[in-house]
Length: 388
Image 1: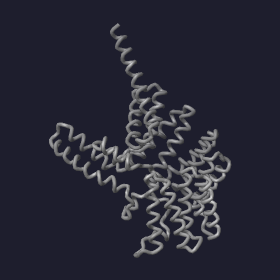
Image 2: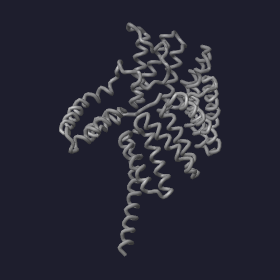
Image 3: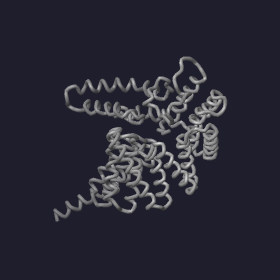
Image 4: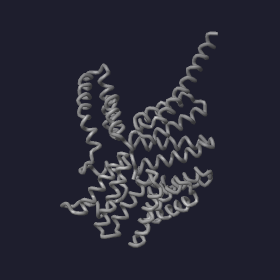
């Protein structure tokens, strides 16, 4: 499951103060329509013919968006699956049914908690997911594949809520049920990875490392020795653990393995999980930049940005992170004008994609102000020297 925390009140605030820029649509992940509204504004404020018409269209569109924003936060049973965060492949409990059967009720409950998770309402997602687990138990008459699937999702929600003891309890039950039902080892992949994340977050790195290695083995087995997103994710998680526990050489080896799989995936299938790939590239680049190996770090950040450009036109918090780090590298190398370009892009992307993350916005603003002040001082000094 991949949360995208969003609040209705903030969406309406962005519509009110920055709707003409498409800010509310960027915030809700509708990048193309947000870009269209921004384009209407640019044409509408220009001297081009049709400017007045563009302003009129934009105004009408924003009036419609008052109702559209509300619809985005209503649980929609007819929502296209491509717009919904999906934690697991559809199970028997999530296939369409013709009438109001227990399977249909379970499917509807799954849609409700996935929608709450997508909107970042984790407490509501936990409550709805708990109900889904109980519905699955009644549907299966006890242990069953549907119960396992919803238990894994419940554990992930609880992990993100930092209710780690409850997350571990759900995962223990899940693993026991997998053994009881004699399900294939592929069913152990997600709960093993989630348990490793819990252990890593609670200061149990040795146990987390063992579980991450188990996750890698399961992912490679499931891929039949090939390359999949699951393999890249597992290697990235272990590498990040090594990096954060003071083992940079081990981390670099893991990232190098992940890069090999990423290259194979890009060659064979084009782009897959863009957010996963960009995060992994940023993480690897961070490790190299920390030891000042800028020559190797910079191409990784640039590749991350290229993936985000193809995926979402470069409008994401992942892209903001890459621009910020490229700005820091340019600053270290004395290229202040290039640093300012990256810092300004970081500030804009944070304002659009994560306006409630005030600390990130403040840091980006400080970087912009600091570099701008330095450039102004250098320009003034050069002017004084010429006139002397």
